[in-house]
Amino acid sequence: MRGILWRSTTVRLALLLLLAQVATLAFGLTVIHRSTEAMLLSDARTAAEVARDDFAQEYRQEGEGGLVRAIRDRLAVRDDRNFVVLLKSAAGAPIVGNLQQWPATVGDAERWRRISLFREGGAAAEEMGLITTRLPGGQVLLTGEVLEAQVQLARASRTAFLYALVAGIVAAALVAAFAAWILSRRVDAFAHAASTIAAGQLDARVERDESGDAFDRLGISINAMLDRIEALVRELRMVTDSMAHDLRSPVSRLKAVLEQALRRSRDPDTMTALGGAIDEADSLHRLLDTALEITRTEAGIGRDQFTRFRLRSMLDDIAEVYGPLAEERGFEIHVDAPAESHVVAHRELLQRAVSNLVDNALKYAEGGSSIQIKASTIKSGSIDLTVSDDGPGLSEAERVRAAQRFVRLDPARGGSGAGLGLSLVQTIAHLHGGALQFASNGLRGLSVRLVLPIALQSGDPKDLA
Image (cartoon, rainbow, N blue to C red; front, side, top):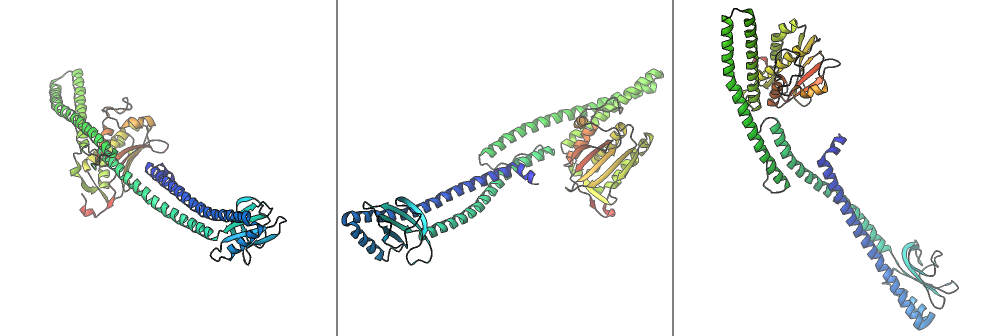
């Protein structure tokens, strides 16, 4: 299931859009967070540098004594509780400041450094930003700021960043899902039109939204193509239907003349020739009838004649009709279908399709002894009508060509025929919205399936035809 989802173009586009939005959001929030944190630290560093410059100016003007007084005055100001300062002598002894001692890890000339230290009277170490400067007299001045407020703001910014990222991911997922839904809906319009046309309704068209976008323009082009295809198919059907219809009368008259000549003839050779000609006329008549039936079925004629009937009864009738011929050729016909179930379909056409499959099995399953007609419901809710034999079967290449019109896989076998039987079966399957499928019947034989979306249903036998 996971592999199927990943192969979906819509899913991959949605995931790509989601990743792009999340990446953009994460990048933007990271830049904002880093910028805010850098700005807060920059303010603390600027304050430390300003204090250093002020004290250096005081030292140049008043010397060490003036610097000490200036530091004490600054520490006496209660409004600047985050200020940190310490002055040590050239010998390394602390002179004045609010740190307990000179940090062992802090050098005498460092531009900016973050470190945790104890202030005088402090119970815990505090994170500070420090600058140290060596004065002309050898003393070393340390100035800085306690970064507690900056750290709290940075922590709050980080928390806000995480919440914003989670909210952004949810919003991006919703946007990606909505975009995928819009794309899928537009594509579904094309898929629906294609499946409807494949079912034989050539008048179906792609539904447009008149937006003028790429999908709408594609719909215009496809609809124009379908208009042309429908016109060509309609003309072709009219030609074939007219030809088949118009030829039936001459063939019937030809057969009548041949039968009349046969009754008058007394020469055995002539009678044999006339009998063969009559058989060929019958074959041609059947061919024309089948061609007409295929054309009408492809045009959707017959959908208004769907009725409810007992499927097992129809299959038993087919087995009874073909029973004597099957016995003559060494076959047994078995029917496996629910006894009290019915379907809604075109009974005559469905019976014709199954009969054609049984007839093909009797003709081509040479060396076999059993033909099984089976009906069952598959998971999709469709009916699976299968005619199986234990004959030689068909190769993969032959299965591809089997349902093509006027194709006879082995003209040397099976007697007369024009190669329209399976084509008619396939057309009947399409009329019911289904499909014709070929498969191997175990190690030997062929299984021909009619998969039709007409599920078996139980019902009262009194209501069934």
